[in-house]
Length: 490
Image (cartoon, rainbow, N blue to C red):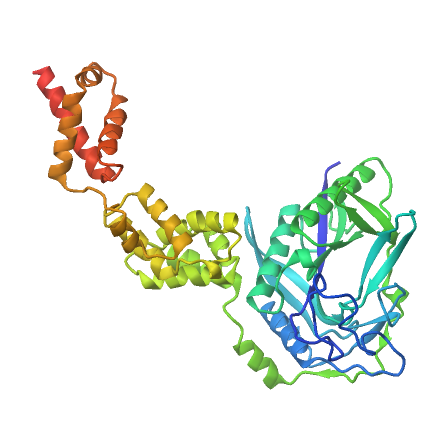
């Protein structure tokens, strides 16, 4: 029997506020700061303390909800989600349950089959937990250390509908959401630091069926690679079980990156297992319509909108547009370059960014903002190339020096004498000289070995230090060789 997957994603994204969700403790880089240095009685869960809602966190959550075209609740409630875990200081998490901040949104994604829209079930605010570090002592004893620096950091949970039907769609959705969060300036997207984490709900069903199968939840996937591999593994595992007539158990799974398989953590909890009830220490969260209007007006052009515009206005291939839009700073760089040189083809500019600049950034580790080559300097270089002053190979060499030194293309070309020879008379004489000095090769060419035209081309290029205009040179070479053929036939 053939099966098909049905997948929904829960995405937890830390919000880049300066202080925590319910207290004034600073939000620090949990991978760099000394453990337990950003902790107070509130986020440590001490008795008798009172939480206070972080207004900036609510604003950031509104940005995301509006960008996802959600319905905003003017009144929402925080609740206590009760469960015991060593890095949860209070023994419960303050979250939103029955009355979330936003619901019923949508996010366009782009795959090899085209564009489609993924439905968003809900967007709600909560607080993050602390972090456990598991240690094995020299005598073999194992124990765990608790760091509460992350406890209480504002966390946004974005839950999709079970609206994804392949591993490709899962990756496209996860990447699109991460890009959106970065565009909005609410999350760095630094997955290595755990500021965005994925949980996948995966089930399979007979192909063509409309009934959902038994789902499992794969927890805490912190890279696109782990997300893809875990979902693919689980689809295959469940399909194999059903094909053998066995049942899929509803449970919570972890992902072992080293072994490349999922493993059972616990039976899947239902909502009643958490004993949700309204948080008695927090009033309802009231969002005024005027604030919603203000936040909506301040939203930037969204990635999927910008991608469509790049395709329509600049006539870029969809794949190129997607790569440029993936980072807001890269898209800004491209558009600045296009505006600086309206006579240049946007596709030519895009090719230089996606080719030479991306290669440099991958090798050097620099971001687009750190490059010594400004958009204006890049299009100046391309202008020298298109004017025939340098050839493609020389242009790439000049760009490399620009990236290293920050010098402008014109200064490098002049100081190193790189301007190519485009003078027709000069190239005519050089071609004639090369043909006269190589009579044996000329005779071989005339007898039918036409591949020698490339050898002649190389000889002339060598004579001028690689600075000949290739188009002018090739045209002159073909003209003189054609004349020789005509003389021979007469």
